Length: 112
Length: 112
Image 1: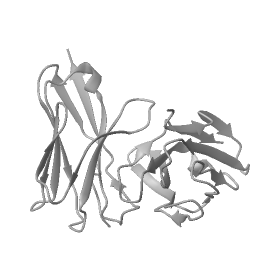
Image 2: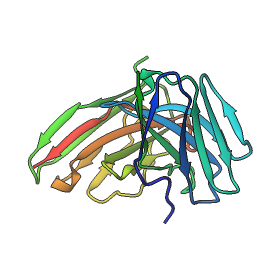
Image 3: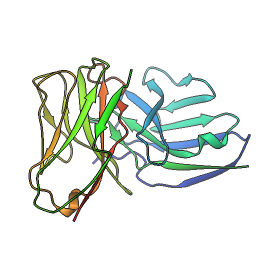
Image 4: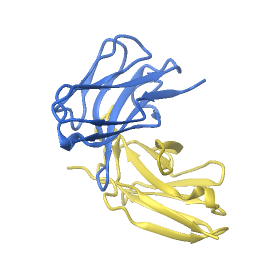
């Protein structure tokens, strides 16, 4: 079956550094991708999305890069802050428009 | 604007009991979703609804039922709870199918 980043690794960064969180997807039919942030005890919060007709999209301190050739998605966070500490999920719509498929997530730990 | 609210926040339930998790959104979104989140497995779709009056099955629908009598409410019912339904349940909504999904705060359910 399709998979989106099934492992839950931890990325540790120093405050002020840039963070890069990676995600591999397996369904080449996916044309919409989303990054979510989930803080402890809360629901996932939308960060940024990108459609397959784009390679890059920027938000406030965040950039999403999409490489369709190798089915890879990344989230870059500039000047990482303690408030960025959370689990980050990527999701794809490979299963159809109603069926976002989520990865297990990556935990980002920001150290002072 | 409250966004999406879920109730209860948490619940301990005896196996075999019936339980309804409530979800209400005030954004007039057409589509709504129910997910469960388990450690190491990410978010898995239980049921969804594209619009009031219609529902569909997600990845893990067994043991759960939903209804969508109106735009705002999307309750999830466990007819006879089992311990494997211990999880955190998230409700989400989007303007229409295929659009960004926004999540509620979650319901933590423990079935003993």
